[in-house]
Image (cartoon, rainbow, N blue to C red; front, side, top):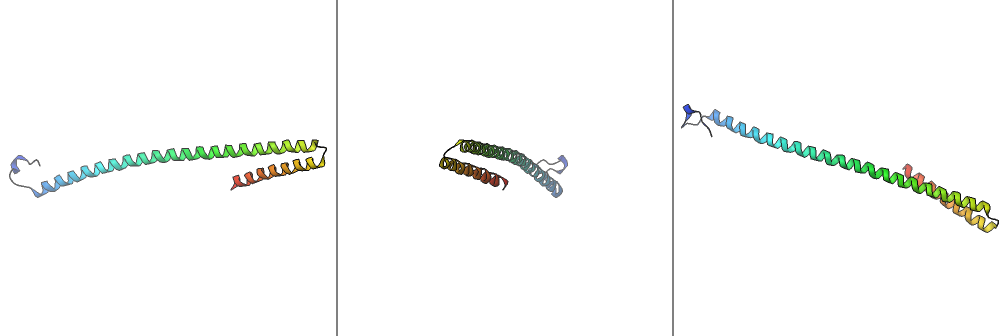
Length: 114
């Protein structure tokens, strides 16, 4: 501890309290800086999570829409084939396929709305 020249040999209580206050202030400043750095790291990590979550939601939506489109295309394909069938049994089978694909589309559309 540094003492003024006129006080050498005796301890001034006010000087000691001031020194302690300076040391506590430095410790609090160091702690505050560490907390600020932690806050910045946490904020950046959260930002990455939010971006990744949005990306995954977008990919899921695109995949679902692509699947619905494929189901609609297959239903239309079977509907066209059913219209061309002369045999009533084959026409009925294609009709059931069309209904099945339309139900898949409806089920996926209802699931996307939830």
